[in-house]
Length: 251
Image 1 (cartoon, rainbow, N blue to C red):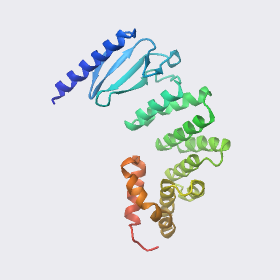
Image 2: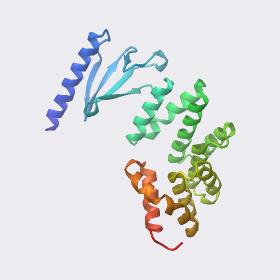
Image 3: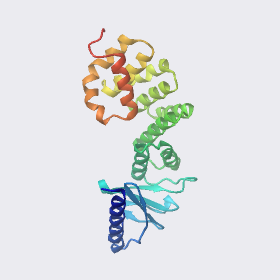
Image 4: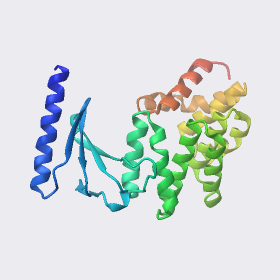
C-alpha cells in the first residue's frame, strides 16, 4: 500500500470515528494526519473507553488513535506546567512515551502525579520506582538515587525498589555499591531470573566471574525464553553476559 493510500485510509478512519463520537454527543475533533495514524483533538473534556479526561488535565486534549491496533493514547499538550491526570491515564501516557523512545516526556507526568499526593501506597512506590529509573537513564543519577532512597524509607524491603537502586548505582559507574541492594532483591524475590541477571552483571563488571556465573547459569534458560519480552536495556545486559560468561564455562 502506498504512503498516500495509507494516509487516506487513516484519515477516512479518523473521520468515521469522529462521526461516531459526534453521534454519541461528543463534539467533533480537529483531525490531523500523521504517519501510521492520526491525531484527534478536542477543546473540551471527553470520555473515551471509560477513561474520563477531566478538567484537571488543563489545556487541550489530544488523542492518538493507532489504526492497526484500534487503540488510543492521550497526550497532555501543556508541557510547561503538566497537570496530573488519574493514575490509570498516567500509566498509559508514560508507557506510550517510553515505548516510543521519549522517556523525557514521561518524567513530568510521574513528577506531577507524585506531587499531587493522591496516590495509594502501591501506586506511589511504583511511580517513584519508575521515575527513579527514568532519571538514571537520563543521566540524573543523584536525583535518581534520592528518589529511590526516599521510597525505600517507606518500604525498605520493596524488591523492585532495591533492584532499581542497584541498577542506578550500576548506571552511575559504582558496581561495588550496587551489589548489596541487588543481592537483597535476589534474596527477597526467591531468585527471580531478571534480578539474578542484574546481580550477575554487577559481579561481572567487578571481574568476579565465578560469582557472576553462580547467579547467571541457573537463570539462563528462563532468561533466554524471556528475551523477546525484555526491555532494550535488559537485552543488552543479557547479551553482554552471554558473551562474557557463555554456557558451559568454568565455574
